[in-house]
Image 1 (cartoon, helix red, strand yellow):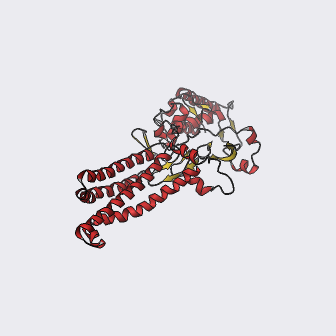
Image 2: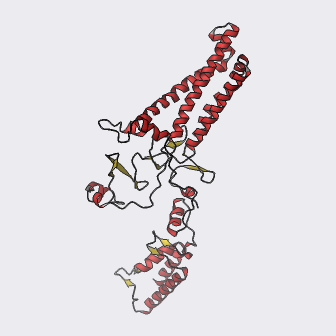
Image 3: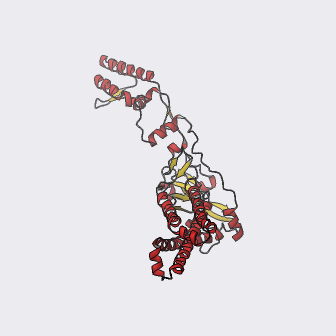
Length: 398
């Protein structure tokens, strides 16, 4: 078993865990088609007239630039959607509460959290000389680092979480925000490029046939369709590019801008315009904190938890194997030892028929047989295989 095979998030993995997508990865097909199909129409129906009107070298360059820009956008889209956006690994156990924070926990928090009564909901950390509160994530069982948030769609805590983009089917975080911005801005350039040369084509038609604008559109309807389509798309991706430029200059994320807006207080992450730009475009992208292809350690408790989380039924032959039950608190016994318990029950029943009361059993005033807690524990562990046999023997004693 490898990590990606038992991953608790909602991500989808391909190529043996080498590629990680969001749960809505199918939206990529729509995004790709909305970019590639207009370029194909442009190259097939519009560019040929441009090649004929201009000299062939310049006309071929127009087509080549559109194709090259489209390939570049597809690479950026792949780098944005098929990589780890900055997922924070989950903790297998809740963190140990610190002494200074444990003493300041409110009674309401202690009473409402039965599973982890000593973990406060927030704690203070210093960011560039300013105190910032970080929240505890109940799902990932960790205190989220500054600028980290839990994505409800991917079910992961993502470092420097910006938003979950349905168009790329992936969270936008610290490790793919750069590629996301380059993807959006390059798509804007492609829309403006196709929009401009479609207008050039319409003008050439009007000059060649001495016709009005309407008749030019009738002679090249694909140019008219592409002009309308790229005009609408350019407003969308262009507005998104301008908005993210503002976020980059002020060192904000989309989540922070809509959630906090930093009203009445200074942004603790703002380092100045130039340093903010350098942090996004010229800093080293950190390595992933997850090795999705790593083999899962084959300890008994993890195998037990994994099988339960994947919904596999427990095998009836499991008591024959030695493993720890309930996180290693109780050691399972071998099947041969359970046979000794059966013989003890037989001897207990026989001695009860003869008269003397056994040492480890007693009769209450209702005449019911009570088995000692040790036998109860062993019977519960091996009841999957031998439960019916125990019941038959107990009823036989009665």
